[in-house]
Length: 130
Image (cartoon, rainbow, N blue to C red):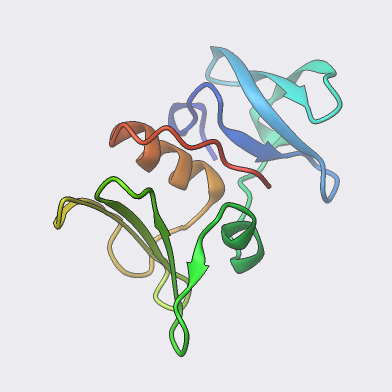
């Protein structure tokens, strides 16, 4: 993982399992400023964090509905936007008013921060919970 792949607000995992943190600053390409889930501020090396895999459990926590008999999880914002994650083909799509506005392609790296970036880039205001 490189600093140029990260945006402010991204949720990453620390070196211990279930240690999640939000990026609040990127002072240079080797360091990150983060706040942990309990509110502790830290400055870390980029090597001390890793992306969080986007799992069915995380999708369900974030109001994604599993489409029965498929590997699809959909989030519908009720205003013409559907976010679809295909956990089998590792693909993320965002559809707005029946037009695809984001498509990761098959077998892409699907991490929480990738979903966060796709939501931000398509102006979808949704906070992700891990």
